[in-house]
Image (cartoon, rainbow, N blue to C red; front, side):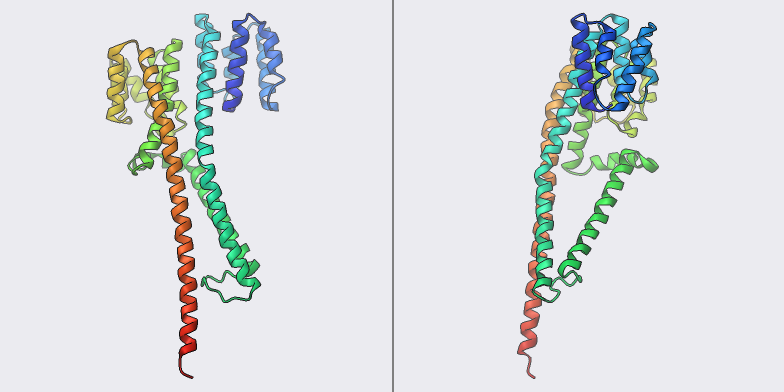
Length: 335
């Protein structure tokens, strides 16, 4: 289930329950939204609800379509009689994650445009060399229309390799996510990436604790929300620590995954109030940090594209100058 669909579902359903609408009627209405997979899931849930089955149980059978966080929040809402509050809070959570993602993608729009323009400029130069029967000033055999097509094929292969690398990292192929600590050590990029991850962790942890989930389940769901197998792998360590009597901050410290500053802030939050309220304040703080981190990553991408473009243009100018200089030198040689 996509974030936008999950946010819309939680908001509509939460609002409907709060207004006292009929459950089966709402499920029938929900069956008219979204792609075929979503409609089929809603029909299945409606049929189960007719038989008196709990909403959380029928949603559980539809995994992995429904996110684990959504199922857990619905289960807690049903048990506490505050289902509408749980769903509306979750709608805000998904809306926040969606807004952060959209901000990041929109921030990358300008660097992407710069990159495309740079490729078009180089392609135009290569094409003009062929049209005016100019010598290969670049020295790579890229002249005319065949040269442009060859350049684009190189760029396409490079883009595919980058895409495969990102796919492998997201799927943790070969345990590649174990390199995350090394990524965090990269200046500017590393801290920004870590801040965004911690923001997602905080929001989910705050939401889970506020809904009434126990700390162990809350930590598991918060780790799940990072979408990183590297973070998910420490869930058992945190669980064992809490069962041994550790506090929330102590359990996070045992994982050796979170920075000392973050652990200290969680510990201070625990001492200053209830876990849910204090973690919520911490989540809001990290939300602001995450927004700045997104701007930092976008600025970094812009800088890399700009430097790369300038580097290519300087290289082209030097190659052309050397080529022309060589031609003049040959012309001045005595016969």
